[in-house]
Image (cartoon, rainbow, N blue to C red; front, top):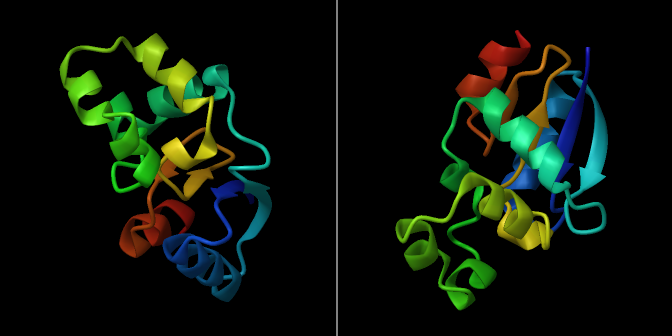
Length: 120
C-alpha cells in the first residue's frame, strides 16, 4: 500500500509522523503542503472522507490562523465551500500532516495509535 503523505517539512509533528512511517515500512508519496498546496476540490474530498468537520482541517495553532481571525470567522458561519477555498490559498492554514490511504480514508494530524490501526 502506498499512501499520500502531505506535510510541512519544518513541522516537528510532520517529522515525527514521517519517521514513524519509515520505521513501519510504509511506502508513501511525500507532498510538501506549501510547495504543492491542496486544491479546494482535493480538500473537499479529503474532508468528506475523513468524517471530520471542516474546521478540524484548519491549523488553529498557526500564526496565519490568528492573523486572519479565523476562529471568529468560522464561528460566524463560513460555508464549507468558503473554507475549502480559503484553505486552498495557503498550505500554512491547513492542519498537517494529512495521510490519504489507498482505500480513500483520510487522517489529519499525527495520532500514532490511529495511524497504526489504519495502516495495520
